Image (cartoon, rainbow, N blue to C red; front, side, top):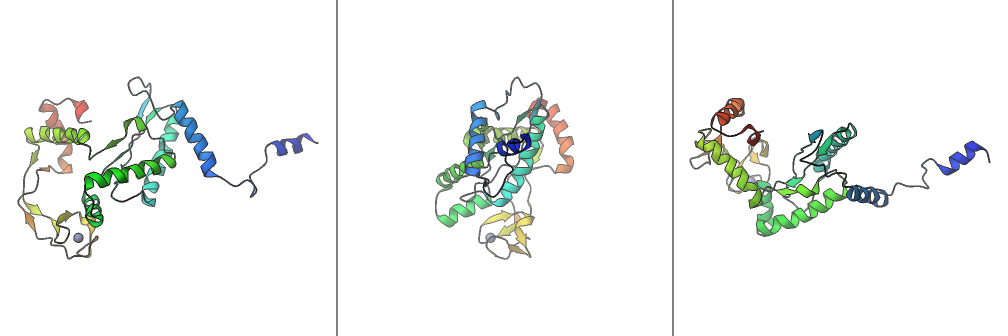
Amino acid sequence: MKTTERRVKQNPAPTDELPYQPELIETKWQRRWAERHTNEPDLDGAARPFYNLMMFPYPSAEGLHVGNMFAFTGSDVYGRFKRLQGYDVFEPIGYDAFGIHSENYAIKVGINPAQLIPQNIANFRRQLTSIGGMFDWRHELSTTDPAYYKWTQWLFLQLLKAGKAYKKAAAVNWCPKDQTVLANEQVIDGRCERCGSVVDSSCRQSNMPPMLVSWRRKFAMLRGISSAGLTPSLIA
Ligand SMILES: [Zn+2]
């Protein structure tokens, strides 16, 4: 047998006879990454830290949708690229379950969100694991976990104390059926995207929670926080 023929036989080109089998190939590499702690950078001692944060999915239904995959894949590829450049990439993952979609889904299926959301998260975790994102599962979080949101509440109180948040009546998009405020993107031709009810956009709520000052004043606000005695690391 000639050398060339031998080489081809040892390294056959992909053909229909060797179909891609994700359940074998991807499971193998995901297991290898877990064994090597590939996705677990040394957060305290990283020489070249790189924080690769992506939007956390909303576990407002039973599972992830294609849009989640669309958003995560690009970010994950970028994180891998940075790691190949020698960075210690930290790619956290979590679940952001507060909001209208989670509330509506809980109402629809008639299950208390405190019970429903953990169920959904369990499936989200299974799916996120199977896609092989380079998530650092040591630091998985949920924004509905009191251990997490006590800090967002604490941070907000610092803003309030510093005079950087205020209470004000304002025009909102109010859905009379869902009994909630909608974002502009959730109003389609004057109707609630979820239930189709005509949205009352003239409604003025007097009991709105304090609102952060506008994004246009964000940097001025951050300077104000510094002068209020908070360290920069808390607002970075
Ligand atoms: Zn509605």
